[in-house]
Image (tube, rainbow, N blue to C red; front, side, top):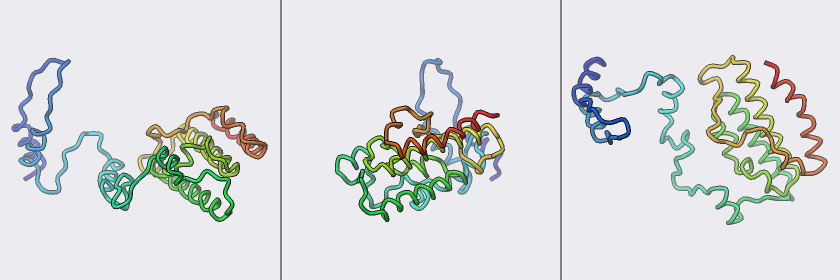
Amino acid sequence: MTTESSEQNITNFIQPVSIPEHMTMDITNAFFSACRIGLKPGELLHTSWFDLKYSMSAIEIMDPKMDARVQGNRKVLTVCEALSSEQLPLGPFSSLYELLGIIDELLAACVNWLTGDSLAQSIFICMYMHCTQLIRDKYLAAFCELLRRSIYQLRHIIICANVFDEEDHYKFTHGMPVHEPSNIFDGYGGFCNDCLHKLSVLELIAHVN
């Protein structure tokens, strides 16, 4: 069965129905029935904007090694649940190995983001990036806030340069907190303020198109 014949079978199965614009119709059953009849194993019904990036995402869906939403046998906690159950230590950290381990994982996640992963599946899988203002370890708090601000500026530069395509860089944020930094995070002490001051040069670069 060719692709043209598959499309014709689906078209014949679902006859267009005229309904008022303000009404909606559930086509779930008809859609799946049409797919079972009109498509062969391995064929995919998709829209015209289905490109390489979306095809790679489709392969990763429900793969435990690739899909972060697949829980498997482990229970995934929200940030609020982790904080209320005290499973997310806020510091200060007595062990430098633990602190450096968190920073190292965040740097690795940043590299993954720069090479094509989404923010939601790389840097922001770290709960500390969602509750920076609650961290009591000044070094980790400063690092997380600096990383977030760096992401904001780097993303701005990459988008303005417009030299990437599809899988080279994923520019969408999916609601992750990467907006312009708020003054609320500027009170973490002299160490944090000194580090944040060094980022001022990035603000100048980011606005040069």
